[in-house]
Image (tube, rainbow, N blue to C red; front, side):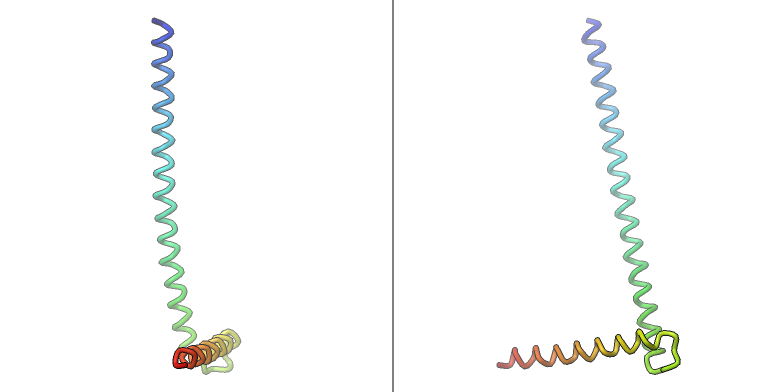
Length: 92
């Protein structure tokens, strides 16, 4: 019977270890998801700040972000032209 008692204890330890590791993995996954969610919120806020700065500074040549603003304006023009071409293709 000692063999079976010993085997039972070992299986119990393995089961307990497995459950502990599974809980750790679940906790890690939940925390990683929460971190990712908070990082997405932060990125959205950064984006909103950037848009506010762009809207305020885009017409000021002496602005500290004048170069980036002019690049954004060029991209906006490019998007506008591409949308115009898209509409032309759709109309054909």
